[in-house]
Image (cartoon, rainbow, N blue to C red):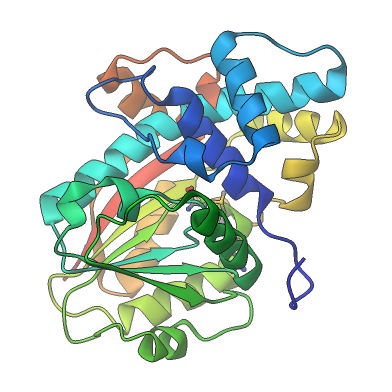
Amino acid sequence: MSESGRAASRTAVLVCQGRAVADGRAAVGRFADPVAVRLLDPAERAAVDAVRAGAPPQGWQARTGYESVRACAEVVVPRTVAIDEALRVRAPRQVVILGAGLDTRAWRLAELAGTDVWEVDHPASQQDKRARLAAAAPPELARSVRFTPVDFAVDDLGTALDGAGHDPAAPTTWLWEGVVPYLSRAQVRATLAALAARSAPGSALVLNYQAPSAKATVGRWLTRLLGNAITAGEPWRSLWQPARMAALLGEFGLRVVSDRDLLDLAEALGVSSRGRASLRSGRVAVAELG
Ligand SMILES: C[S@@+](CC[C@H](N)C(=O)[O-])C[C@H]1O[C@@H](n2cnc3c(N)ncnc32)[C@H](O)[C@@H]1O
């Protein structure tokens, strides 16, 4: 628990476990995250090993945890590939990762060798990540990584980035993956306003968000009912229809150039998935300034 009274994000750990499960298994040649497993503690790694071995544990609560990690691995593969490829083609000088969690890009993408990365996250989650990095210490591949603690619900993103040396006069590629559902509509809008105010011409936003889906919502409620403490502690607060998201981005001068659902992306990668509803409702959009 941090000084702010909030614990480090457990969904950030879940997503990292998903990437560790998929590493070397799914979409080989397009997806790889050998760093993810290094950030996990022994119990978290054991859960990854169980899924990789296809060995579900006894007991419904343990089984729910197992299924969450298994399902998460399916979701993260298309989303990671789409985002990595959007970053690679841009080769940006500045990347700001909003709600970075246990994101490993600064430690695994050689294409970021000329890039300064700002990892913005809730202070509790960021403190947890820094402790994990200190224990695992993978070499950094990005030119620099600057940790910038921000609670989107209370802190001013612009002030925090100013203090961390981000240059608003140079183009920035913003990355916002797996965070929007956990924020209210007002918090999403305020964050977009703050990032747009620091986006020089040539900037872009790579955004992952969740569209409304009755099936996916029921699935989430069921896992909560079955005692899944991970999703119970971090409820979804905003889901967006693509047209509504595009309109909101447009208000801040961000023009959507692509917006695909994860099922479509997974099929293009040739990976099979059991959780078609949650893949269908997850989306990755790229929006450019101007
Ligand atoms: C599901 S994790 C995603 C982490 C990472 N982007 C990824 O995809 O691996 C959600 C992240 O959102 C962050 N987050 C949620 N609410 C936040 C808030 N109010 N302020 C800052 N970060 C927040 C959490 O700390 C966590 O790192």
